[in-house]
Image 1 (cartoon, helix red, strand yellow):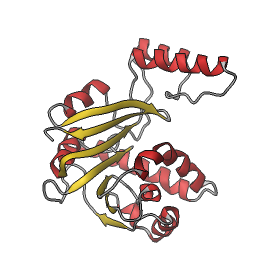
Image 2 (spheres, helix red, strand yellow):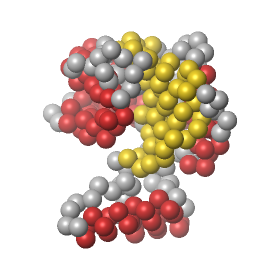
Image 3 (cartoon, rainbow, N blue to C red):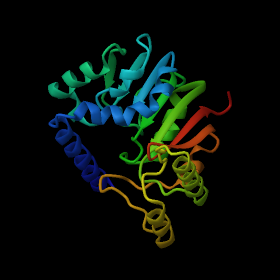
Image 4 (cartoon, rainbow, N blue to C red):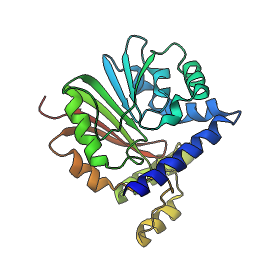
Length: 238
């Protein structure tokens, strides 16, 4: 398991190193984060960004938010990434960086108002342990946004996405598909049990995620945003 994690981590780091050398790196990252802008801009209090890399989500946070980034990879502490990230965040809050894994957060219980796991759980050793740790460090009523890649959608997800695409076409406008795959290809992948998985990702199934969340979080909203399955959660028992 550890060797698999190390390989996935190395592939992820290689991808981001290559991105940093591209002229359109800022535009590429804005395209990733912008669909979550409204959510991020509405956050208040203390925010822990698990697997937050160089703290790029801070671009959309209010300047008075206490922003803590937890990241096990040392790549993001490189001067070139720190310079880029500071510029990318602009007027957003300064980030406090903590070197740690999401499975073992070095914080007290009930310390944060919000936890972010944006494209994080596909890269960790144990996503269920990360979820338990998020619940531990959140205050009662604390909020979470989890964004997952390469999750196989439900049949109802595909149907709903297909309807939205048809309606958009009939209205003469370009619809933004929630699921980034053609419907025929998606149906074929589901029928054959071969849903695509990037080499640097850990496969996470929607039903497993719901099981891990049970008893810890209440699901406020489950949606597909820019091709990724997104869960908005509230800590249970509040």
